[in-house]
Length: 108
Length: 337
Image (cartoon, rainbow over all chains, first blue to last red; front, side):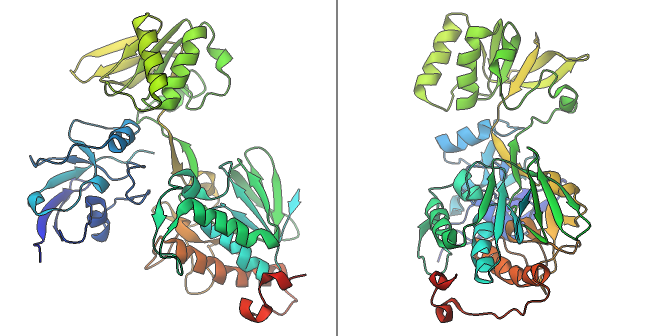
């Protein structure tokens, strides 16, 4: 049985949330945030097609390079920075212990 | 004026299946949707996405589910107003709702079911405080008549097909075209990317990458935009027009101003009875509504529509007795007259 990991998510009000995420359920960060009822919409259901889970990776974890789909979606998002990622494309893995992210502002 | 028994706003899966349930009660339905095709987000955002939680289907693609729903409701012959969004709602002196679209089409019904899902697909607007000051005064999110840009100085933002295609087209007719994009590579058809690169090399398009338009300025109309580059530098570019082309995103839209109780961008309904809103005769079903324990799932929308039509039936035919029958007892929908 693989271990749970601890991650930190800072919401749009600056409030920090310490979450425990399983690594054996193929969950992504968007789904983890939703299960903790954090304000992440996940409109497209994790298809990298809506950017409602746009976040900034604050810790120095080496994540997989974003796919073309993810980069394409970030092109249509706002407040995009060098550390911008879509939460739905970050899958929970034991290597991500201590991952820290901040939710990006919502845009209409 | 289109008259119907139940007017459904939103032709996504919930709205479509509601036609079936209303049809079993012999109620006629008409659907309004801002998109040009039925299916809502399933058709517009992810037609190829497999869905795993439709009872009886271990897996089904979103687009296929829409096709099946259309087939399922065909016997009930619903009406559609597509490519138009519901803007206003009024009541006439016979207690009927009149819903008018942005194109002026009027619909009349004793009950209205809002199955609006995520809302109306509208262009993504860059988060610039005074952007609204110049909307239709130099800033446009959707290009309808490219001729208005003849001889103008145009700035286009975006990295997708729409930004690339308009850059190529306007390079021929505008006096000056600049394309601003947040990174150096573009998504979209390779052919379009190559064309834009060639135009940039030929000096016909001013290509500005690793940069974003962050400020707009002008008087009566737009006069300039300020482009912030990743390296921190800022450049003010004189222009008559700015076209931010960042795709579409759903918002609740005009329905938010109908006097309905709204919570977190969703319509509050009474889930203990019939998914009615705070306005009698207006219901909200599917992803657009909220109540304690709400789950935004297609199958929950199906359930909510089924319960709701029972209540809408009583409004449409106050004197008729409602006798609920199972479709198996009726011998399927083919037995309807």
